[in-house]
Amino acid sequence: MSEQLQTGLIRISDDVVATIAGLAALDTPGIAGMSGGISEGLAKRLSGKNVQKGVSVEVGQLEAAIDLRVIVDYGSPIQDVCQALQLNVREAIENMTGLNVVEVNVKVEGVAFKEEETEDPHRVK
Image (tube, rainbow, N blue to C red; front, side, top):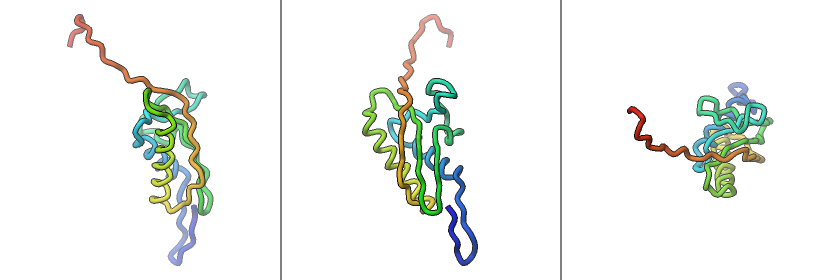
């Protein structure tokens, strides 16, 4: 985005929009993580440090389109989680940048199972 004001030009980098989208996605209940894509392994989960992984953005002068690749928690209603994700990402980007988000596309690339700790009586603590 770039906007000419009386004081100068304001530009918002694609990376900034991708970071906002990634953080909003990770804050959405039911989202276990972002997926780096098939080329980086089978639905590899990424931490908050790499919030741009799994996020593609196309930013114009006044509008943005977002593509997200996510991993959903097992047992979560995927349709509901994805709709909440779309809303959260749209609101975060529009509120922070002033860009109009025309679409938020979501691709669910995996399901995360909660790891249960098994008590091993022979394990030394």
